Length: 305
Image 1 (cartoon, rainbow, N blue to C red):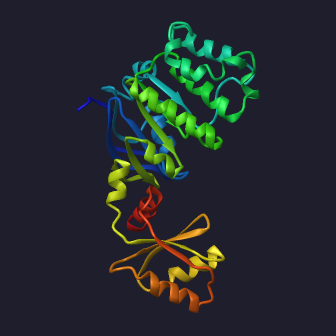
Image 2: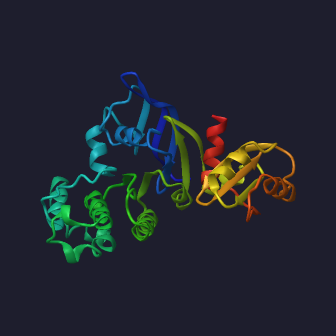
Image 3: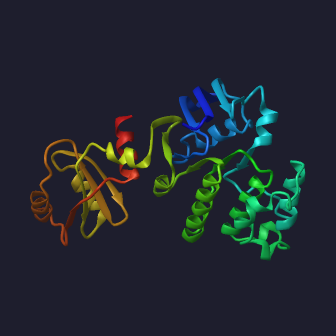
């Protein structure tokens, strides 16, 4: 097994009366692509700020590559790359000037570590004289990642790097992360997008400062305990309300134009459900048995917790 790159034990963070992180523990192995999945307010950003030495925890122990986040903060800053959720580069500097600035801070040059960033930077190099503030969302994302990598870090912390970015750029970004992981860099990434969970080696599902579950995406889906149907009809919201009242319903959640209906126990009876919905005035009803997604699993864990 690869050595532990990140170790967190009984970590708690309070902002005055707000409990942002609630007694969480986990480990990330070296060379792992580890995802933190959860909505805004789950505690993902606060966690990353602690691990990158920008916040001091209220209690608990955290180590990054064997270094304590409080005592050894200078060493940690030298071996980590951090891409915050909000674009935080200098918008009045050009692409090239931003990258040179960050390289200089860490005592290196673009040329020295160009091989590490070339696959990413090559896509924005034609615009190297353009000011960062004039870049598109996807290009800003690539520049920020290049700046986080230019000093050849051992570990990357990426806080919601694909939020607000178009679908094509999101896909390209995850392909870059996989190449970096394959090159030996440990990556911790947070995202509110449930579909991105399946791109990680392991994920932690977070809500309200707690970790509800940690495992591989495949194992989390495998552990989903309920029978599950996808139900479609004319109007999704009246359909959802009706399904929430249906006998044996565990959850009824909208997924686009369909409702995912899970049952507490017993065998599912699509024919009976179809007949029931027809008697309630729902037309063009389509019912399909489906396999749970990460989002289904997340919603179920919220019910438990």
